[in-house]
Amino acid sequence: MTPPPARLRSRESRVGRARAALALLSAGLLWACAGAGDPPAPPARALRWGIYQIYWSRDYAEHLRRELKKFASTPDYVMFFRDLGRPYPKAAVDAITAAGATPIVSLELWHWHDRPSPETTRLDDLAGGAYDAFLTRWARAARKDGRKVLLRFGFEMNGDWFSWGGRPELFVRAWKHARAIFESEKAHNVVWVWCPNVMSVPDTPENSMHRYYPGDAFVDVVALDGYNFGCDHDEWHHWQSFGEIFDEVLADFAARYAKKPALIGETACPPGRGEQRARWIRDAYEQIAKWPQVKGVVWFNLDKRREGEPDWRIDTTPESLRAFNETFAKKRPR
Image (cartoon, rainbow, N blue to C red):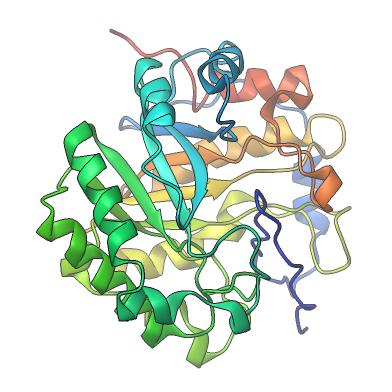
């Protein structure tokens, strides 16, 4: 089954794709409709967690404070998007670190007024030096700030919904060029996160996610984005467990990038019916214990219905918020 053309992504959107299923889903649907059950036993290791919190330049700290009040513990990460040309986001870093978390800056390799297509790619300019002044200012500001910041540079590069996708060799050159500037500025507090989508679109050897990998010397953390779009999104998606979405690629990561810590850079699940989402969260918490390379999970906590996607917010039902607070966000011993 060939996936449909990817939707264009607007300034605060992402259109990740889960793998297309070929097997019947009767057993999975029976599982999905079961009750939430008791809280699962915790993984045998400390698992970090985080959320996406949309970045408002005004009153961001207050927006973040209100959102975090819902959770049983303080997140380890708060992630947000930035595009090219905007300065180092010190106000957001201030707010996130004051809340006790580490910022993840997802740097989109375009300007928000660009058409998201290969014809408007900025990769040539990045690799050729046109953005050197911008990258130098960003790196210097980060070094001066001194706090740890994770940088998801050109995430989901193996998807056709972004203008920086489809040209792996050029992407690698742009990555290495940008990383070299940060190294020359001694911005060693910036952690470089390589984060493809869990499925390449188009799913061809030429567009394999691994062709976009810049090399171990240029990457600090490997990550993956992947979503359960559920049964009601479109004809190409169905209800998928965490394992169905991630297991195959995480096994590949364990073989290829065994020395690198891994993150789930973005994931979420639609509300579903009844307690489907609560059940999915609890199962995901149990399933991720199989992958010791994965050190943390970031939930994409945003209502995207106006852009044709589900409402990804954790607290759409009391049951799903409780499930999240009893698993990923549970209180930790001091």
